[in-house]
Image (cartoon, rainbow, N blue to C red):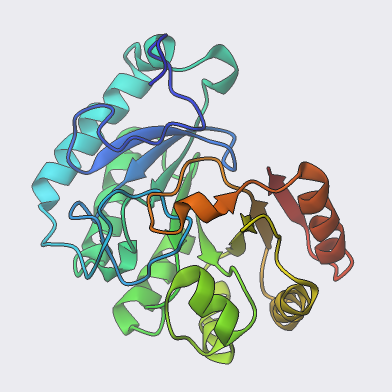
Length: 282
């Protein structure tokens, strides 16, 4: 919160309303209020992106999800948003639009064993608030677990409730992915998962670009990234290209800095040249 007690795009504090699983943010990319669902309350993830702003990030999966608690929190919070004065008290006038329910939080959401049940729960709650089909239900994912049958079926379910996926692709080479996301991953395998994801549910690529030691992504790495987009352009909805908005809490934080808007715009033009729509959030 700011001193005026209003949410901003630079404050994504998961504890802002004092709930375990539910937290509100102003999302640059969604364009208004996003109701976040944090399934990784232990700050555990199977990746470690060097730009991640989650404090005390650890490797691993989330604990068991208390579904009854999650449902109660979601119902109570939506009541405050839809029928109460939350928007008036905490959101600037220009952002007072409920845009989505977003599975994001402090780690990889699909690593929760209860993820399919959570999708069921969200559908039921949205229907009770007459919001089903009227707002988006978004999954923000690194895509690493798309191959699991339960996750893939959940993506098909997500598509049926006005859902979409934002799928992480920060680089196009094994070395680039290892450097940025701190995982050993074959880019071909990652693109195969991305394709399966996009065939199950409308999918956007999400890419974070930043300067490392004062330098942006080099040209050879950028060409590999653009080639990756070329390979999946027929199945994706577009690309969300964004820069650093919040301070990293990882060991590399001091080495990271924001890129000029013009540099991001030039990358967006190159993506557009492949026939892919791009949304830029500098």
